[in-house]
Image (cartoon, rainbow, N blue to C red; front, side, top):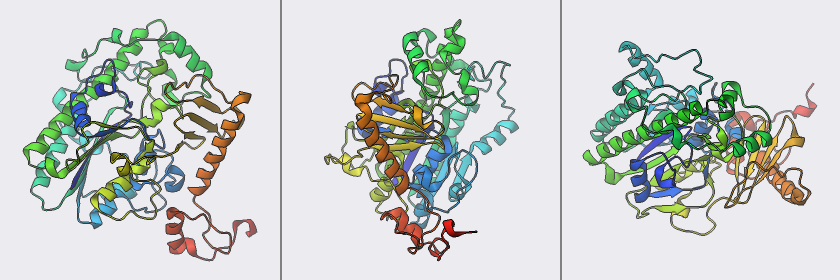
Length: 469
């Protein structure tokens, strides 16, 4: 089987028409979900691009692969989807926004990334022009690049180019088509700028004020402006920015339709599993917010996920169980019949497709450098390292409420304590120890630690750090 993995950046999990979104239209994703299975409760383990992508490819959490920010490289050459599939004889490739550490990216056999787009755009004179108030207006404006040169179209072009090449290659393929949008800039081609009317984006000022009062800390960087309150006298500026965000999703959907049609034309569809997902979410207008950069909220951690396997009859199956992006790698490897490396911390979601009870997770975990999150079906807790006395505890369930913080509510104290203990246990189990010497202490029995203990530089008889100096 081939794997065609279609990806977007910063895509709200409900921003697809089959999910009931009142504005956006995504006919091609709707058809894919109707043929395959879609996951209502799929989560990322970080709402930051590169760390999330690294977790997809390695099946490990941030505190294990240690890639917490968008810059830099991995400290260890962890087994990844690419290295494993290359060794198994697959043709590997990608197009679009890569945003992976070099240690992983170097394993692509064929690549056309955003850097290649920038070169081509420069050669053809395609250049975005922005006004002085670009950042304060949510990086929102019609693109000054023609539709045929827009990065969404270019990414679709390169995906079709790869499929044409793959048809004539004897090897099965694993291909990642990674669209940069709907991540900012919110700049659809000018001819599509009126796809959605601004007045269709409702504003609930009461909800906005409740959210602003309940959140902990400030939004990072330029996104501190990215809320309807910053344009209170002209809220249509915010509404138009949300419309452009949704327009980008619809334009990506059109390219997805084009790619899937080409897959059919080439006679590859019956042998190709198609997955659709994103690295993380976006507020997309909810709570009167746009963008991300506030850790811990479902709008940012919950992600779209569709799995279509032509050898199965899922026919629109909805998976309600909790899963997260570290589960992608073991699921793909299991489906391809390849061994799952000891480093992987995720679990396969394939049993959920067959309806096995209790096949999902009891909880998902996410983090940034300072914020650690645990979310179950019923509760969510956000622990803030910089001010641990001011955490967040939200009741989730059928009607999630992330504006009423129950952290200091006495009746919820036992829930808070239980979630904190589970969060601490997870952190310890996924940690990278200073030394693996059994003379120091016994380590937890997990696949990750077993692999780590086998590495020569880790298994050496090292002096315990407390005894140094």
